[in-house]
Amino acid sequence: MDRELMVLPIFAMVCLTFIVGVSMRLKREQVVKKGFNWRYYKTFEGEKPPRDALQADQHFVNLFEVPVLFYTACLTVMILDSLTEFIFILAWIYVLGRVLHAHISLTHNRLLWRSRVFVGSGLVLFSMWILITYQAVS
Image (cartoon, rainbow, N blue to C red; front, side):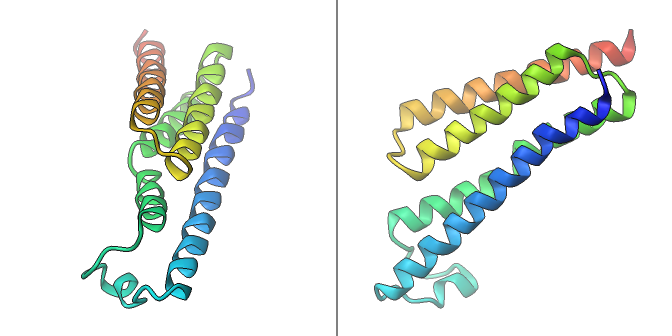
């Protein structure tokens, strides 16, 4: 497979990050319009914002944690020119898992569902890394 195809799942994750970022911004604006002290967002000290705004904030930060390992995996595949159909499919499964995780987190936020999707996407990512490492050393 053409290694440049890995840009597609990377771009999808970037789009998800921007969408969650816009959602976060809109939720912050809503709570400030309803009277929440805007100064909280300057220092992140004091009374916490309402749950919806706080969930969006936390989810946005979350997209700069474990997904960094996804970006690194994709770039490693591209550098090593070791893209296989299976790794490509795993990359898209990971992206879909993160989209589902974002949806759950930003809507009903059911912990059991959210945690299962999070663990599932983490296992997919770990599988990607096992395959990448195996291909690199063999």
